[in-house]
Length: 51
Image (cartoon, rainbow, N blue to C red; front, side, top):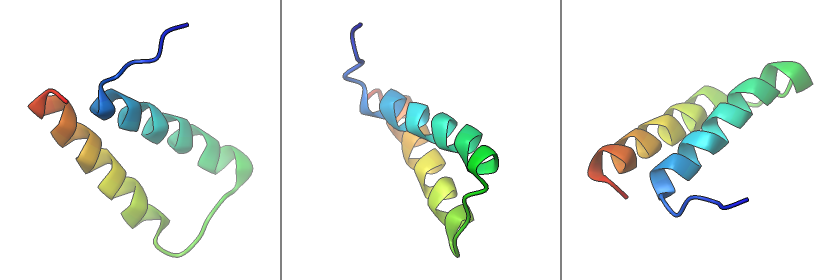
């Protein structure tokens, strides 16, 4: 299995995994929405830029 070297795609993968696990594990803390939003914005920008 080969991992991608594209940082944007790796961040997107992390975001998708966390988005799925958070409701399943009932994980919550103050600022979770902000952290997830920043992760989504960062991955989107890096994908558009091509990194």
